[in-house]
Length: 557
Image (tube, rainbow, N blue to C red):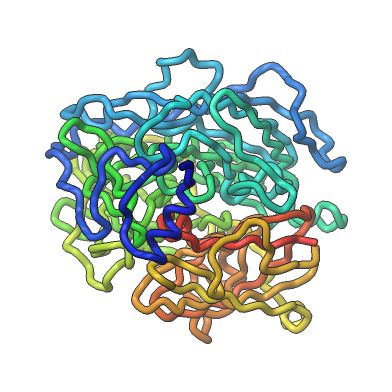
């Protein structure tokens, strides 16, 4: 008997409880009943380990890409990179033994010498293409949750379908590569609209991330550690606060530009990751990790910092604040979403709400605090299960400690009143748009879109390239939350529950690639799928919902 997990899931979700697990693809390290909660993680003293930042990816010698190609509009020579997708053992806390993780390693670094949970950070530059080769060296005989087969999604990217990390075979693609195999990805980093001569330089990203996207197993593989940052720069966001050329925004840069992926995980008594593979509602951990370390600290100087926050969780939502030791909130400037820099900052915010896969960038001025003062990044969202936040706020679960250093330092950075302005969608575009409705709900213990489980061999929509579309996203699943991610293009949010959305997602102010659908909410979003035809995915980014089976394929024709 050689069932795969899809057949087991369907049998269990639609027909009753699980009784046998005949395939290694369905074996978990620890087995729990669908309604049980794993034991708590061992104690870990907070704020005793420093925050770590993975180094930048380093180029390799040019290679001949297999099947990957750049559009003819790519005029600059590409840069080549090579990553190994591997298993490694790392300490996530000084009081824990080394934990088995999966992750990405720069091929220029020897095996066993990558001391980071995250993969290397890429810096992509506008109109300067990259080729990235991934070689899978995960153990083929792996036992435990997760599957050592890969398909890597650059989340927020604009590139051909074969390089998007399509979740599995379908639509003429077969992007999954197993142990001992490699796959090449082409990232042209051209502005959307380049094929029509109407390239839109205002439609550029800022903070992207790359992660595994394997059908039915994204949650397990990402939870094991398969994630990394990909940052984008251009003349406007040049990552150089000292460049005063009248174009560069001079946002905090260098050591003062800090990407942070916040995750929640659970560990057993031996310090190993625990995941309940029978939990299709959304798995929650009981330890907060930032860049792979449990509740680290960060030394900061008395000046402005750009913090790039990524909710890299399977199911947990956050309501983040920065607070002083007495709980007093610290105001900051909100400058970017996962759709890139906003047209203008939102000043003096004290809280940002984030769902899985969302990114928000904030600028915090630590010059306002005395040397030796301690501040904290804390989460106030109360969440008891995979349904999502329950609407109440905790006093504050402290995730990261900031330690303010000594005397004043030079700070040439700034947050100007104008960031990356863009035109809001016009009424003419709205009138011309093709309209579609997608309803997200629960059925027979699993998750569906328009009453259908995912089938990558079937497209639910054929969007004509370079033609306006308006999608109505409807949450009809009762008290459940669904963070919805659509590949290829950013979303312009037109309405939330029939009225204008909040500033951080309002068209003309911000763009999005993840939309949080709260209980019984409806959101209308505008797309123009440009440049790249082919099959694409959209799905809930509660990864347990995605894996069981809240995903659909759409085609750009």
